Length: 288
Image 1 (tube, one colour):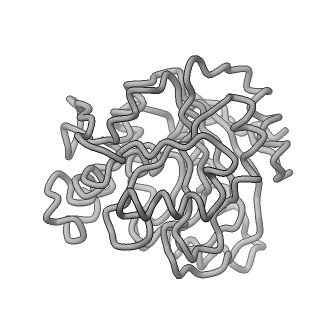
Image 2 (spheres, rainbow, N blue to C red):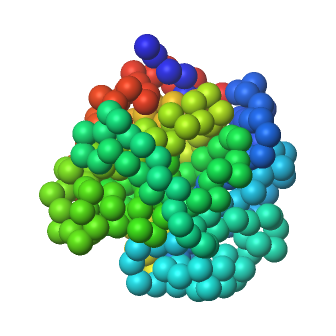
């Protein structure tokens, strides 16, 4: 089944909202807006002002979870300070999903590597999900997009360690790499199963560094901005972003980003998610 992915080469806050309205899907009830709050010191994350129109339009609550590595977001106290410093809580309602335990455990009966996912317990407050992803590289996953937001992004601090360790948190940084990527796909499937058709995905191909917004010290962007994509399919939208990077043959920074993605076998997360049936790698790209 071919999914639809819409692309605009215009990258503005207003265009994000325009694409959402064009999609014709109304997210119901209380809307959780999952985005990356940005590690302290990171220069590339997308700022609150960029997402302000879309978040206000859906009356959304920005949601985040604590990290599993040392930094300024690994405890509730530090993370809330970072969220304030970066302006999120000044502009929007904010909910740190795993601010307090216990975690919410979601089953993954069809998981290849993990059969359960641990997420912030406050996720139960929300009826629908808007996933705002900054597409860029990543030190471990190769790239970060919609699938990473669904998995590592919504997982609690302990849940992140569980995914990274492919079910063994003690192997958070030493687990077999493809098993980690497959665990991300497994975790993502537990979120798509929970919300089904009440999720919209927006990927922004802007400020594309080889490093993630989770890096306090990150390389500056290496590629020119490409555009904004929107879809109801997390597999298709991430595949489309990868394909757009490959297609940018005249961009001198393209090969640098691809080296990061390919050296981490980044496409395997997409392959694993498609195998689980949560989306399709076959898509129709509609430029608007």
